Image 1 (spheres, rainbow, N blue to C red):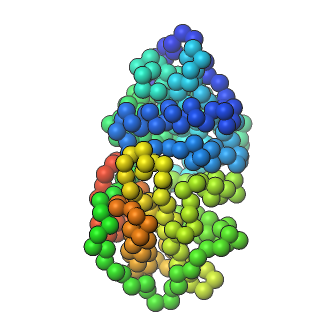
Image 2: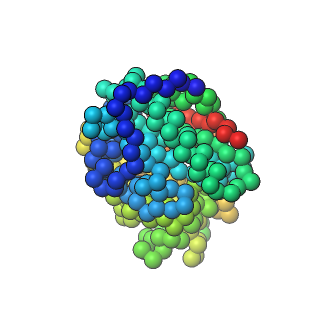
Length: 328
């Protein structure tokens, strides 16, 4: 565990709502730029992410800002999920420090505070599950080293994959029995449930609450015209929720679309549906003026997604790890 010596005058305080959004976004983007992570947040996206409080995540309770001499120099937060692997109650911690203020104990202070609050939250909620502290980090970056020094171990690998161009897209026929149809607003909850169900046999866990659904659909990058959803009668069999992060593209000089969530529900797997939906998604993004496409994948995805994406022209660009430390 790091020996924590916080800089004199460092103050940790609770999130105050919209008045803090610009500073949170500034710190997150400054860290990504310093660490060469190809990400750029927008105020509207962070607002959606921090909205709609639930039992598992409430920004007013779970997000903390660090100030030094009246300037925001760091931010940290957490939520919790009940995992499918290991049957754990995992408190997922995150944080960022403004790069000019690194190596001054601010990250260690925020991590220690985050852990303390997580353990207090765990004690206040009755559960028979062992409690675990978890975090996500880009490989080789300062955040990963901070976690390692404090007892976190890598438990899973994840990749960001990129198709560097949208040329030579192979036309893959839609398997028999499926129909591509739009999702109307009154069907958004059905889409959310289908998507969450498709990932229930995957590693980890997720917040499936109605509040989490609202956070998802409130994200400004969500454009229903980009979604490619396959129906079998009145059932959603699978789909791809595609998105274009316009502000990120402008900031990073990209024209990139994201296959943000690729899913097939278990009864409809192994029929070639995902391959067909990926091909249609790539064409759709190309028609919107994109020149590359990206997605995230669990390196050990049980349905063989990594090989599927490689066959569709994607290659690994960035590696991330899920890290854990057992708390009880």
